[in-house]
Length: 143
Image (tube, rainbow, N blue to C red):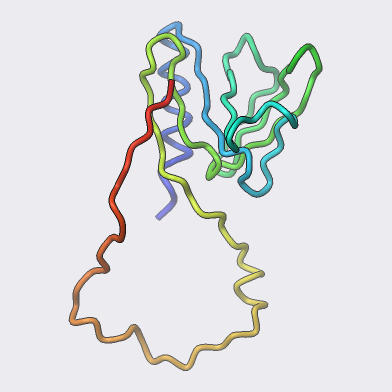
């Protein structure tokens, strides 16, 4: 099944704009293939104003969000893979959604070319129990 993240991002963007609010995206600037202007990220993250008034050529699909934006008066082309988007919210009231950090996906060719062959006949016998989550879930407040 496809990830729901890109669908939720597009729906929340539309909902925020329809309510006359300013959509902001919290992005993991260190995620592979992210293209954001250098020097604007803080602690590996950057908040992007993706309002229709602030960007040009906004394109959102199931793979990435891309657009042209200005930083300190200089135009930049930005590219943000969907997995790098940590949240989308309205600047005015903070309503929106925060997502879990997604590990970068490996391309199919990387999986096929790794030279490792499996001689397993199936999954190991774990007694039919689903895997248990490790660690404790946590939330982060985004302002």
